Amino acid sequence: MQLFLLDGFRLLHDGTLTAVPRGLQRVIALIALRPGATRTHLAGLLWPDTPEERALSSLRTALWRLRQHACCPVVTTGDTVQLDGNVELDIDQLARTAARIAEGGDPREAAGILATGRNDLLPGWYDDWVLLERERLRQLRLHMLEEIGRAHLRAGQHGEALQAAMEAMRAEPLRETPHRLIVEVHLAEGNAYEALHAFYVYRDLILRDLQLEPSPAMCDLLADILAPIGRPAPRSPAGDRGAPAHGPAQPFRV
Image (cartoon, rainbow, N blue to C red; front, side):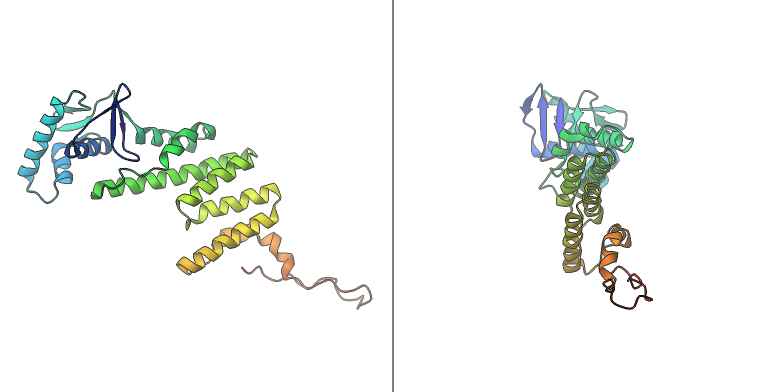
């Protein structure tokens, strides 16, 4: 069986979509997101405004209904409930890929998982436990994209590095690190204009939306390029030969 929670709930058995009532979808999804949780914990999350005994009774009924299902994806062990070991979970694949990339794995292996990761966890669901997990997975994907971009940059694969950085930027436009990576890629390619353009696009964005300036770390990337702009023009050869050809370098200001 395969359980998909990204871009909506889907349970597949031998590649065929299995119909699951919405109430049981919530139970299965929570069990998938809280592996090994106790019945009390699950009941409290599923029915937070219900007395404990009544919530536990509702959970027992839901688990009984699941066991009657032709493709029951959960197993109970004592007081804990978890997914059957034969169920493949899409967010587990995302987490495993992120771990491999963080450990220096080949970034090209993540292409398919990253495409799937563009989708939100259970869109349209607003339970607190869904919102928390949705944000965790969003951050996981953003960090993985940046890791992939930096791995490609170290390998001199500038096109691939730029694609990963821009994907992270589209996912979170106000996040500085993907913009910084874009600037680094352009500089590595020797494209000073593109690097400056990317810098000022980000600077204008956060000035408008957050009234903030880019961090010193991002400004330092372009200090060598912009420093000569702040210097006075060289003196003419007919001028004062005793004076230095250049005045002192002016500080870099963005």
